Length: 155
Image 1 (cartoon, rainbow, N blue to C red):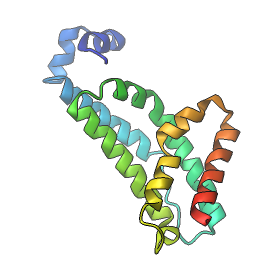
Image 2 (image 1 turned 180 degrees about the horizontal axis):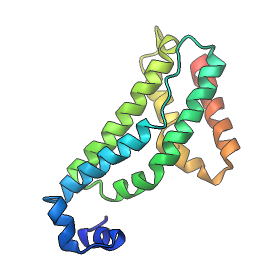
Image 3 (image 1 turned 30 degrees about the vertical axis):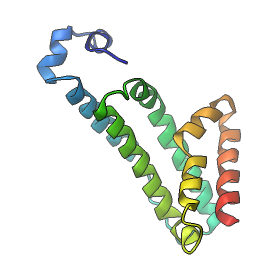
Image 4 (image 1 turned 90 degrees about the horizontal axis):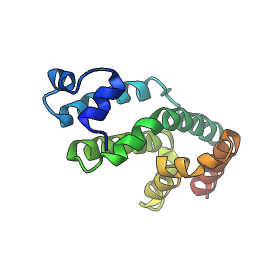
């Protein structure tokens, strides 16, 4: 879990300077979360639900790749600091945002199906699954996610 001293050292400032800008570590975490959210939003494009399913899947996987690659360094630190209720809340908000994006893009495929399907698909294409597959090449990771989405959604 990053401490104020670690953050100050990395930023090249004194520990005291950290608390000139932030009243406590939770306030710093919120600011870092807002900054991360801005970076993530900059990677997102609207994917029309009217596109053919294979194209939506391909675009969605590309979008997940951009989001997850942007998210990964901060997410790893956040998980270490998740004992903080603020950080845990920020992680949950990011997960809900991604789940909402999934629901928007594949709303037609989820309609009238098993109510757990969005949860199943969400788990299959979560950041944790992406991170687990980082041992593969980028092309193979994208292929895994396209296959997962195609199999789960088109079934």
